[in-house]
Structure formats: structure tokens, C-alpha cells
Image 1 (cartoon, one colour):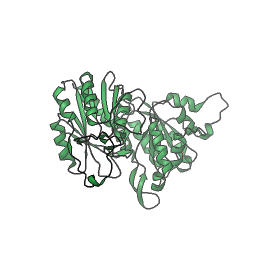
Image 2 (spheres, one colour):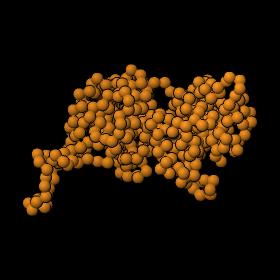
Image 3 (cartoon, rainbow, N blue to C red):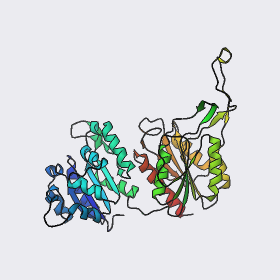
Length: 403
């Protein structure tokens, strides 16, 4: 992955700055040429000479911001870069990068860089959890930047919390999994993605639904589109903006979703069923609003099963097609996931525990266990949904390549 690649490593002020030297060394051992940019605060923790000696490359600092020799070092470095990594990224640096500031050589180089970008945060847990930092994180992710989730452990302040800099070996591992330098693995493929929670009408103003925000499905659509696929996003109502470049098919009910999927699946290479589909729908839908009255104080709602979309898809699935499902469970996660995988003839299933408050429905983060048709399991780290989606799409591409 890194062989022959040009990696720019931006280091900000953090007690973990010394670990960036280890990261630079490890990247070199994997075949990368590494050049380092130090913020003024970073230079107080680790000197430019350390990185120059390790990388055998000049180190950019604010001293090179103004030059009288006609060179523009931050643009030259930006054009040279194949992969930009900010590690450790302080709360201040994240704020600069998220808001497009270019008031020092580190932020200006980052802004001018068109190559894939990765941010590895390191800060006190209170700073990491601050709403402003989380907004900046989401802005970076929306801009296509990969933001790794910091570790939980002992902090410089003497207590435990989330915000600890990931160990260099773990950073390398996650980069290799996420493959930010990867080719467009789904080029020429047609992928259907479903998203959001379906709505089953009771009357014109009420419906049964679930807590799905649609974020996971939208993330998968974005990741598939970035991997080169032609993407159709079949979506229940959400508050999200669809990724640019995808075809959007709006639906409401499970029956709507079934019709939309079954109409389009024969022409697709893959289907990712990330929608949270209602299991039941009202037996009867009232034409007018159901009002409270003396006669319906004990109103009984009769339900029937909704169409089993994946079961119907399995009946028409061709050997070259791939189907991917999700299992959102509150108990017996892996057992229920395995049953769904085999009963619906899926090629891949993502199982997640929605009883956890830190992941799942409405959260920006997730952690899933990917299970393939051979029963091989891969547990992802807890990370952003777009990064989970990237891992899933990578698996999808590998399966399609075998068809």
C-alpha cells in the first residue's frame, strides 16, 4: 500500500508528538517517502532535526513560510503528496483544518493538498468530547477526510479517558484496512443501497417507524460512489443530504421499498440493504385521522407481517450478484446474524449491537462484525460510519471480484 508513495506527516503540539517520529519510521519501512510539517507548538515537543534525521528529508516549519528565493514550499509539498496524515492532531489543528484556515505552513499545506487525507486526533477527553471538536470532526469527514477514533486509556493529566493518541502500529493497521490510497475497486459496477427507517401508516398523520437516522446507509452509498460504482440510493425519509452523484429513489413504506428494490435488482451487481425495515404494518389504514373518543379508549391495533425483501431478492439473485445485509440486534448478536446470513442467502452481513448508546441508531459512530458466507468474521474498530462503510465496501469489492 505504501510502497513508492509520498506521505506528508503533519505534526501538531501534543505530548504524543514524539510518537509521530515512530510513525514516520514505520511508514518508511513500508516503502513510503515521508516528509514532515511541524507546527510551532509541535517544535516545542520534538525538534525538526529529529524528523530530518529519520526521514532524510527537509522538515517544513513556519520559518520557511516566507522565502526570498521564489519558492513556494507549501504548494510544492502539496503537489508532491500522495497521502496527507495529521498525527497527532490537536483540537486546535482539527479546528484549523475543518474550517479551511491557512494561517501557518501546516494548515496552508493541508488546504492546498488534493490527495487523500487522514487525521489522527490526540487531546484531553474533555476537549475531544466538546461539541465544537465533534462538529469539526464531522466537517472533516463530510469533506472526505478519514478521522480515526482516538484510543481510550491513560492520559497525560493522570486519569483515563478517550483522546489518547493511537499507537503507531495501530495507525498503520487501520490505514491498511481503510486503504485511503486504494484504487476505485467498484469501477463499472452498479450498486443499490437502501437507507433509513420505513414508515407504516396508521392514518394520514401517524405512522409506525423506528430510530434509524439513515446515516449508515448514506455512508455506504457515499463510499460505494467514491469507489467508482454507479449508485442508486433507495431511501426512506431522513434529514440527510444524499451524496453527490448518486441516483435517489424516495420511498415511505416497506412495500414501497420492496417494489423499488425488486424492480431494480435484476440490473444491479450488488445490493446493500442498510435500511431499517419495519417487520409489521397495520392491518388496516384509516382514511381519516383517528381521533380520541369514548368509543376507542381501548383502541387495539392489529398488525401483519411486512414483505420479506431479502427473501424475495434471494429468489431472483443470479450467480454474479452480491447481496449484503445488516442485523441490528439487542441480544444474541452473532447467533441472530448467522441465522439471517444463511436464511437470506447473503454474501456478507454487518451485525451491530443497537442496545449500545455510543453506536448504532442516530449515532455518528458504529462498530460492526462483518460476517461473510464462509463464516469468517471481522470486527471493525469503533469509528465513524463513513469509515465503517469504507470497510464494508472494500469487502463487497473483494467478493464481487470472485464472481
